[in-house]
Length: 127
Image (cartoon, rainbow, N blue to C red; front, side):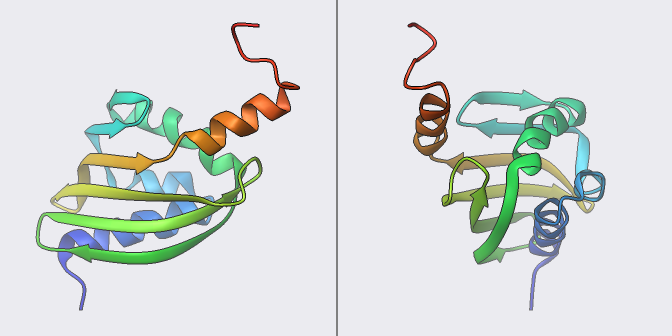
């Protein structure tokens, strides 16, 4: 049996991992706040702009685990993207009235940074 927050988090996960960003955004509050490795993202438009490039490179996603209660859910998953074959991540979301109001998005940026460096021929931005 899944909790209310877990149901929302899993529906959101299902939508974006199937390249349905519009469907995923239906579960995101207009005033959402996301704390990600790159910094804080505020508002649904900024959150969509943050997610769109990643969803565009997504090849596959597999759910590892999910847990939740009435207000909070954690979803742990692994993604395969065009530049990175394995990118495990976790999201801890706060859900109010069926909408994600806060997300703490945790992933390792190092594989993505290495892929960008390889794609540039080994030149970093400072070269």
